[in-house]
Image 1 (spheres, rainbow, N blue to C red):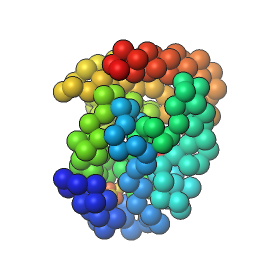
Image 2 (cartoon, rainbow, N blue to C red):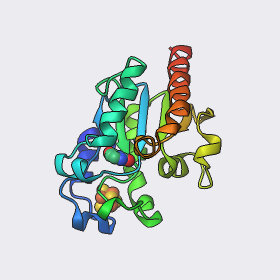
Image 3 (tube, protein in one colour):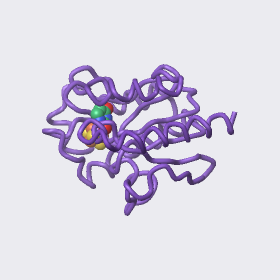
Image 4 (cartoon, helix red, strand yellow):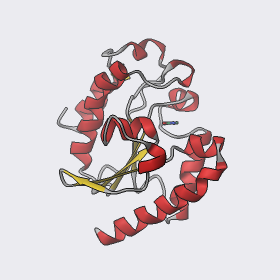
Length: 184
Ligand code: URA
Ligand code: SF4
């Protein structure tokens, strides 16, 4: 998987975990392949599965608004998920499903070489930053690792369920904007 074509081909035909049996489309990722910022969600939902693109349902509409609030749109950044196939009924992806799929996210990260990786929600933060990551306590905190700046914020679905979290999410977005300016 050293080229985008190889990566996308491998994802399209992937049967490395049972999620392939219930998918409509593999949702590999979308955006600028030379982006400075990579956003990572947990896995496709219903709309994403039907359309083959990440974050196009209600959470995606909120993500687009969050990006717009700091002057970004989805064509400038890259958006992907920890697992590329939809977990049935939007359940959390199982540890073994994540373990099977994370190779594709790693390959994407090597190809994009972003300066910043923003984890959207606990699942992504635990897969990328640390298995015991606590989203409420550790969101908004930057950590540099292997040349990437990592940070996690609330998943947009969490903000839809609990709008009181939006204030903290806004602080995280402003912090992202500052980090981007700092790294320019
Ligand atoms: N939630 C996610 O984590 N990813 C998507 O692509 C859509 C909703
Ligand atoms: Fe393959 Fe990932 Fe889909 Fe599982 S979720 S079948 S590992 S692409």
